[in-house]
Structures are given as C-alpha cells and as structure tokens.
Length: 240
Length: 240
DNA sequence: CCGTTTCAGTGAACGGTGTTTACGCAGTTC
DNA sequence: GAACTGCGTAAACACCGTTCACTGAAACGG
Image (cartoon, rainbow over all chains, first blue to last red; front, side, top):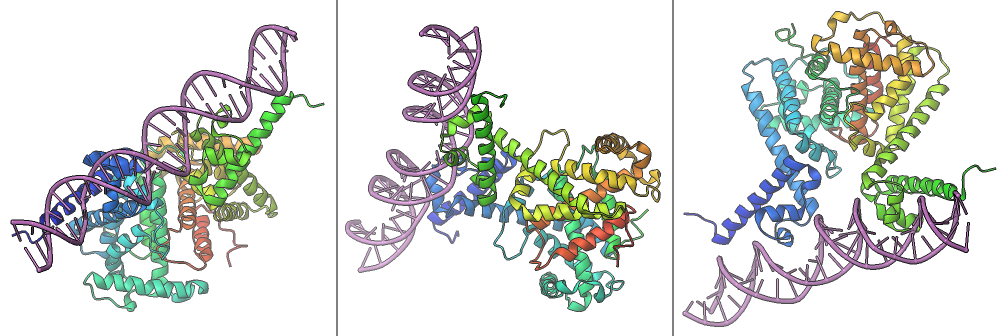
C-alpha cells in the first residue's frame, strides 16, 4: 500500500515534526527562541541531527517563512472565497481586511517573514501573496480614470516589468488576463496602494503608532476607503 | 580648571568610546555585530568591563537607540532650518523629505531603532522626533477644512490625549500654542499622514516594495503630495 | 541469506555569545 | 599612610550554530 519505504516515512514524519516544533516556538516565544537546540529538545533528539534535514539554521528559518506564507495565502484565500459579492471592490476590500486580520493575529510570524530578507530578486513574500490574490479582482475593476501620462517616466521600465509579473500571476489563477486590463497607470496606483496598506499594517503590528490607540480599526478602515477610491474601486454599496 | 577628577574624566572618555565603537559596528556590520565582546575588542578591554557602564547588552542597545534618535533629530532640525520659506507647507515637506533622506542614509540605525520595542508607553521614537519638529509648522497651517464630527467616536479619547501631547511638544519648542490650532479632526489627519509617511519610508528602507524599483523617489514625492493635500498643506508654490 | 551500502542520530568538540563572580590594582579620600 | 572606591581582568557558566568521527539500523545486491 504505502509506496514509500519505512525510512522514507520516518523521515517525512520527522521533518513534519521539525516544522511544527519550530512554528510552536516562534508563536510562543518569538524568533529568538527558534534555536536548533530548542527544536531538537522538543523532538527528543540532538541538535546536530537537524543537519540531516536542513543545511543550516538560516535554511530552516527560510523554510519556516515559506510555510507561514503558504498558511497566510490559504487564510486569505478562504476569506476571499467567503466574500460572496461579485463586486471587485468588495473582493479587494475583503482581501485587505483579511491581510490585516491575519497579520494582527500572527504577529510573530509576520515579524519573522518581514525581517527575513529574501533573495534580493525583489520578491517580497507578503506582496507576492497579496497581489496574487487581489490581482484578479483588481484587474476586473474599472481601468479607466487614470492616464498613462501621469506615471513618472523614470518608473516606466520598472512598471512594465512589474505589469508583466502581475499579468502572469493573474493568469496563473485561471483567470484569462491581458495587459489591457492592467494599464500602466493602474499598476502604478496599485503599487502605491499596496505600499500604503502594507506600511499601515506593519506599523500597527509592530506597535509603531505615535500613541496608544485603544481601537485602531477605524484608522485602518478610513485608510482603506481612501485607498480603494484612489484605485477606482470605491464600491458605493459599502461606503455609507 | 577641569572640575572633574581624573577618574571621572577617564570614565566619561571610555563611555564615549563605547558608544562610538557600538555605533561603528552597527553601521559597518549591522545589529548582530554589536556584541559586547566586539565592542570591548575595539577598546582593547574585556567584555565584563562594559558592565561597569551598562547593566546589560539590552541597556547598551537602548542607549545606542537614544543616541541615534538624538542625531536624527539634529539632522532633521538642520534640514528644517535650511528651509528658508516661511510657508508651513514647505516646512512640513522639508521635514518629511529630511526624514526619508536620513532613513535611507542610515538603514542600520533605522532598523535598530525600528526593531527595538520601547517601554510600552506608546512612544515610538521616530514619531516623537518627527512630530516634535513638524508639529509647530503643522499647527501654523490652516486648521479649517475638517469637521470634528468626522473623527470616529471610539478614537475621541485617544485623540484628546494625543492632542495634549502634541500641544505640549509644540509649546516646548518655544512656539506658543494652544489646542485651538490643533483641532481634533486635524490631529486625526496628522496621525493618519504620519502613519502613511512612516510606513512608506520603512518599507523603502527595508526593501519591501513588491518589485525592484530603480528610482523610488517619484513614488515618495507622489505620496507626499497626496498626503500634504490631505492635511490641507498643499503649497501651490511647490505643486507644479 | 549474507555482505555492503546508505543514512538518521549521537557525543564530543570548537568558537561564539551574554552574564556572574572573585580578585588585583590604581585613584580618591581622610 | 591607611581606608575606601571603582575600573578592569581572568575564569567560569550556560547557551548558541556548526563540524566531525562514529554507531547502529534500514535498505539493497548478489
């Protein structure tokens, strides 16, 4: 029945336990607590044994980041699926709220991924996950409003490259897409909006507001309204 | 002549060297390189000797953060003084640009202060420095436009408390100020704007934009224009 | 079935970290 | 000159990531 040999099954099981232990340590006690020895202690083995599974401590943390991002993607995907409205504006708003909710609910995970510089190929993990999910809804929204002339010339080349990345990501999601739905000016506004959203959430998670805010949700909602209006996705159904 | 005793002079000198060595290590090799032993090595002493000056490694890093913020405050102050225009809009714009310039020019220092959670008395260091400097100019700007009714009710108490903090900070700067110049709605917009500015700069310093941007300055300028307009400080002299 | 190979896991070791302790010694004070 | 204060040291402890030689069990080949 089981294709794999006994050794292979044991190895897979141990690897699962390593990831699980690492995640638990991170959530309970923060990034600094995720040490090789602590993980090994949880599994009842010794630290050098972990080198049979990962090349280094850094490699293990990188794997942990990937796991976390997969989980976040699944969480955001579920929240998006729960948004029954077909309105692109509602969908984007749902993903934005889902991102903030996940980040506030998983501060240690958020901090680890945020503070783990990736291969410098300009691929921020949160940005990838978010834009991959929100991309189709954004592309489905109105693309008028903005004229391509308003994007700074020096950014033209960068934007064209990112436009291609976006279109490819959207296409991967089964949705047929072409560059027509994502004109350069819109791509520019999307990026500015994502930076605004990401920055706001990061500061909120890290407690970087200039004073104690007992209920920071209205500030986020307020920002989100303005942001969605900026990319032409202000759904009048939601704006009261 | 010198009031202090020989011992006191030597102690002050050593403390200066400790801070200097710590700062150099941070700038050259990042936060993880700021080790007690590395600092001691630079001074030609041993690590335990540092405990005569600081209670712990954390305390030393905290001192380092304070030094960094003092430097940043001085840098921003100089840039603000160089802005000869009396226009509040120009002044605020100058401080915003100065903050970004300093952050991009001192990424390691920025990262250390950003990642060092302060006594949870809700006092983010960068926010304090910035608002203390920009506060007078903001208060001098027009305070109309916004109606106090548009601020969320749940935030009212928090805002009143922060309004007092702001007024006190502005007053400290010699400028006579009262709550009249900083109505609640304006305070709310200022906070939203600071979060936007701070978030943008943080993401830029940490390389968290979703793709490689060869020249990110236009994105910042664009954001800044929108931000200043939002708090009613869009100086037509600058907007082309 | 037996010899060989593969490989997960161990124990000891190395160099690094923050921190504590006992101690020597120079500067200060009376 | 004696007593005191306080800077710096050496040694030690517990932790960390990492390497290496080694054991023993699982897998494989004839």
